[in-house]
Length: 136
Image (tube, rainbow, N blue to C red; front, side):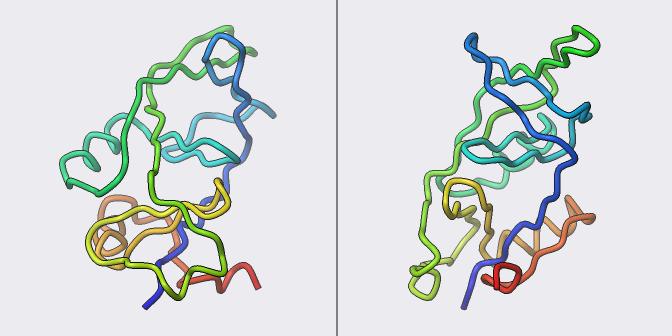
């Protein structure tokens, strides 16, 4: 059995500033889930939902997003840290029992089948291709 890729296409990206804030780039608006190399941000409401689900090996930290075009700081998202990493050649050997996020190459987020079923109800607009089917 394979994990499912959380297929998220963000309109922009975030750039970490020296003071710990993350600047929205390319005129992007904050999205419910924002993923890029080395970061995952989720809206605070979704972060609370995931914490209440007791998803394994994740932690949340307060975050400040900075919109330079409006000179506005936003505290609407939390930084999510996933402590289950793998490389693409390990995908056949993963233990994906339970509610888990998995991170490949520090930028591609995957979910276990059990968590996928829950997330489809909570975040219905996402797609969940199985395994590495979108990477071929």
